[in-house]
Length: 169
Image 1 (cartoon, rainbow, N blue to C red):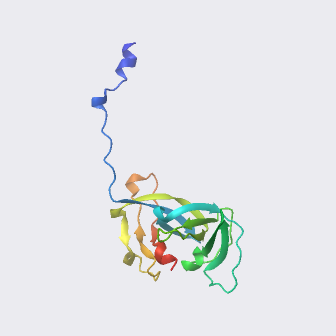
Image 2 (image 1 turned 120 degrees about the vertical axis):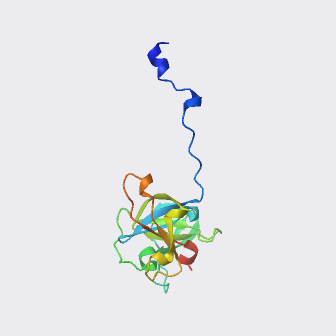
Image 3 (image 1 turned 90 degrees about the horizontal axis):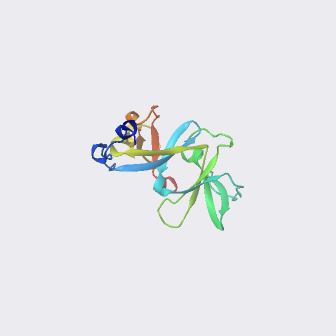
């Protein structure tokens, strides 16, 4: 072995220690409803689907688009735009149905969104209480997520963090 190749090796004792594990970090799935950015805890998300044929349910409330069948299970699909009081849009190639278990039980709900963005890992200090918004969203808003720009190459706009249990009430 030559001196050049052996000098590029760093002994384990000189290598940098692994960063400490992040505590108090929650993962959120971000999505768009009209032009607004929202996020729900990733722990409540079961699956993300392309838009399936939705069967209309007569005399159902406006927020319910209908039902779909996913692997033999009937799932009620809700319109995120109506629930979140944003402008209605036509479905596009980016429209998705997020399957959510709001209570952690066996019941799964579908939430049609305009676009799924990405998963954000937010530390406790990156989340502000719902009172910081100042808008009348209701009790389904948990707070505002402000992803830390120091950890990202490009700053991310704030996210309205939703409580799935309250959203589907």
